[in-house]
Length: 217
Image (cartoon, rainbow, N blue to C red; front, side):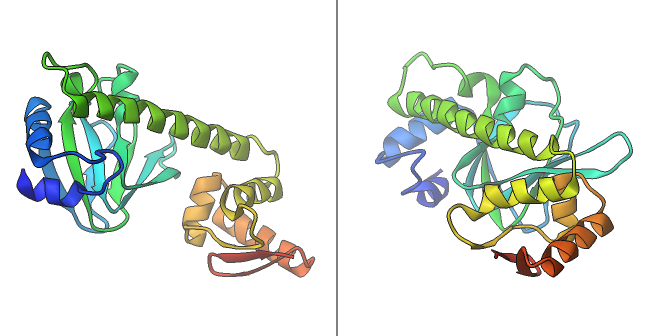
């Protein structure tokens, strides 16, 4: 447990907490810690919802396959954050999404029943984790709302522009964390059609780009 504590020190999910309190709460939540390499599968769609994951370091990608077997990228998640809490809190028996490591990462798995309800000793860290889970859920709900806005656009160009709005902020130059194939999966469009539309936008003087680096003109 000391090794896990060393990894999460300074993590805003835990705040300024002593090792003794950390050890007490983690023991209460029946946890296990797993390290993953870039590209490893954290869990596949269909995995039983026995745990809520706490991403302590690194990043992961959440995706799912449609009925035709096409991969749809839902989101990239960066530490510190929870994984699978939506499926657990929704009462699902199995996770509907696949989670894969985007970089080397460490995941702390918390027993789903104990992680979502206060323990008998009502420890402060446990209450802190539940409070943070609610804040993260709210942020994820906002992200999902933005993704819905992208998917409801009728044309590929409209989807691209809405995607740009999500990542550029107030800057004209920005980077999208996707390859061209991954961007097509995120927008739920054909890769060739996406590349053609980006080329048209460049030729019309609307944008410049090199790989996943873009500039709005």
